[in-house]
Image (tube, rainbow, N blue to C red; front, side):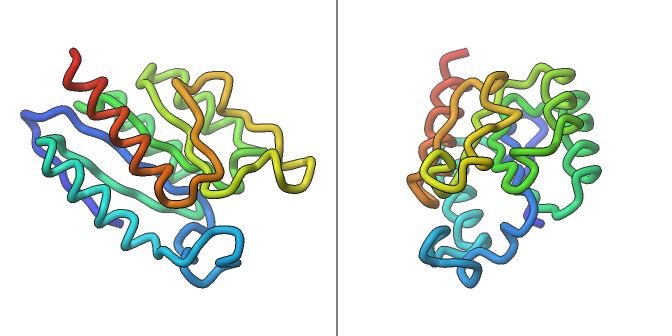
Length: 155
């Protein structure tokens, strides 16, 4: 887990779902060779350069992610970037937490979930997300962060 926060700046929360801690070694032909640590470092550098605080959290446990979303609602978190990973297809609890806190979020997937097994094509999150980026590998996170920064600065 990587944490960076400044109380006086807008905050972006990046949530990585189950098995994303295995990036770089897990099915690199699908998910790429970037590690989660390298993705987080790039996001932290981009956010820092823009003057935006960021926190990145990965968990294999649904309740940890739900708890963090609920905490975000009480904190200065202004935008969430979420890769729900395996929870995409099953976590009504995480979706409900996101809709309850009313923090805008972008759903990110490293692979194109519509080009894989048919059961992967349905996401519980897309309908309540600001947008969805998929199939662009690790770059999807960076594009989501660029959008979040632009949205925060426009306020």
